[in-house]
Image (tube, rainbow, N blue to C red; front, side, top):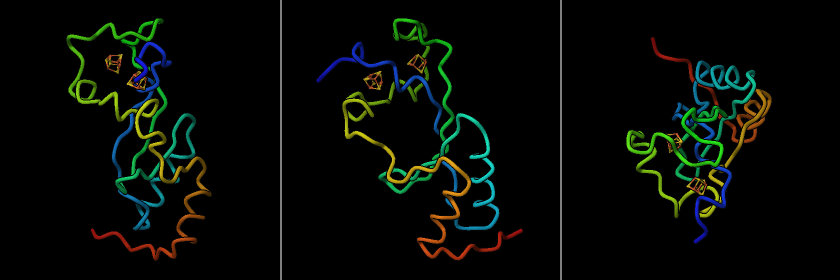
Length: 120
Ligand code: SF4
Ligand code: SF4
């Protein structure tokens, strides 16, 4: 398997956080709001989890793409499996990728999703 040195440090240049999918009016509206912002995408992954992704370089990633925080790095970094990564693992983590607010409306229409009212 190729080493991380051959990669551009891809996994250290974003933050992805799980979110609720567009199944209620409030959640669909929130996803569309995320997508109004630069450097943000939303995707459905192959485990059917919804994620919002912020493209942002880790401040501890050095110019040579090595980690300058290695001994103190978080468990998220420690648990990341090289053989499952987006470069050399299973490939694209996106089952469905959303870049624009309109992409959400299109998905809701295509999947015939009836948006629920949120409970108070
Ligand atoms: S784990 Fe994968 S994505 Fe991350 S730096 Fe190594 S090869 Fe690149
Ligand atoms: S702390 Fe190190 S391994 Fe973790 S994201 Fe930053 S550069 Fe990458």
